[in-house]
Image (tube, rainbow, N blue to C red):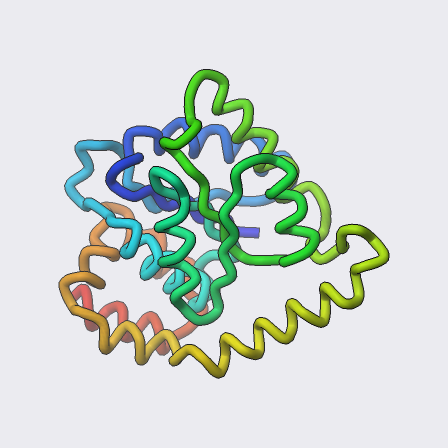
Length: 212
C-alpha cells in the first residue's frame, strides 16, 4: 500500500516527526510512505486544510496513493475537507481505539489527526500506536465481530451514495478556483511524486493543465 502524508500550514513544523513515526511503523509491514509536505513551517508551498482535501482527493482518485494521513490543529477541518470529495472516506482519529475501529468498521481510505489539540509530551508514542492499530489488520473485519455483515453492507451503501452525491474528480478540479487548486499542487516534490504514481490519465491531464 502507498500511504501519502499531507500537512497543512499550522502544523507543518511537525511533518518530519509524523513522517518518521509513520515510516517506522508501516514500512516493516510492507507499505510505502510518500511525503507530500508541507515539509516545515518555512515551506513556501503553504497548504490550508481545504487544500489538503483537494490534494488528498486527487491522490486517491488518481491511484497515486492508496491511503492518506493528514490533519490540522483539531483534525476536524481536514476531515471535513477530505469528505467533501468523491472517492474519499476520512475518519477523525483521536486515539488507537478510533484507528482500529475505523479500519474494521468503516474501512476508509484516509484519516485526519489533531496535531495541536492534545498533542504534547509523548504524542509520538500515541502516533505509533494509532498507526499500528490502523494498519494492523485487514480492513472491514467488523466490530463487534457479529456485526461484520451489516457493517459491510452499510459501507457499500455509503460508497454508492457518495457516487451519486458527488461530481467526478476531473469536473471538480476544472471548476474549483484555479489559484486554490494550483496552491494545493505547489509542493516542491509534487510533480515528481504525483506523476510517477498517477494511474488515471484523465486526472493527470487536468492536473498538468492546471499547474502549467
